Image (cartoon, rainbow, N blue to C red; front, side, top):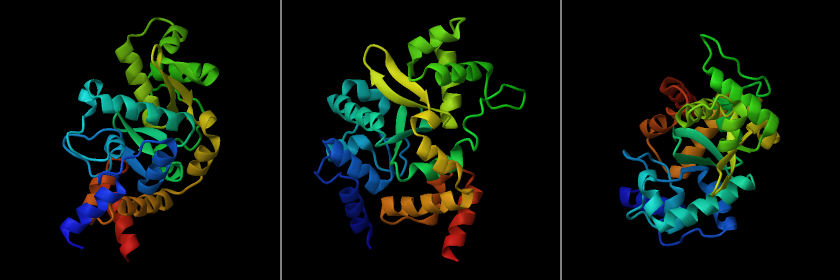
Length: 258
C-alpha cells in the first residue's frame, strides 16, 4: 500500500471523504468502526480520527477546542456527541485534554477501563500522602456517589466551603482520569452533569475490571491498527503511550509479532 492509498483509506474510514455522519445511527456506526476518536484535532496532531471531522465530512479548517465556540459546526457536532453519551453509545475519557473529549466505542471501552480504571470501583478514594486523590476529590466523589447525576454547580454547593471552580475542576479531573466518574449529560444553563461510572455503566466497568492488562493492551493495539488501516510500531507506541508506559506497549507489540 502506497502512502497515497493509505491516506485515502483513512479518509474513507474516518469519513473525511465528503461522506459526513449526521444522524445518531451514523455516529454509532462511525465510532464502532474506528473504536475511538478525539472531539477536535490537537496541536501538535495526534494520529487518531476526530468526531468533528467525521461530522463535517472533511478535514479542512477544522477547529481546535480553543476555537470551537466560534464555529457553528462544533455546536451541532457537540449536541450529537452529548446524545451518544446520554444513551451510552459512547464513553468519554480524560486522556489528552479535559477540554477535548476522547470518545470511546462501547465495545472498546472495557479494554480502556482495564488499563486506566480502578479494580474495586465501589471503594471510595481516600486522601493520604501517597494517594493520587486530594481531599476535595474525595469529598466530590462522596457527593456524586450519593446524589449523582449532579451538575458541577450543585456539586460545589453540596460540598460546602465554596471551593473555587478551578479547584473543583482539578478534583473532578483527578477522579475522571481514573474513570471514577464520567460526564453523562450537558444542559445549557447548568453545564455538565457527573455520575459515578460504576453506577452509570455497571456492565462495562465489571467487564473491564475483570480483564488482564496484557489482554486489554493487545486488544487496543489491534483496534488502533484497524482504526489507522496500517501503522508503524512507533506510531502505536506513541498513541498508546498516553495510556500506559511505552515499554509495556513495546512488549505487547513484540508478543503479537512473535
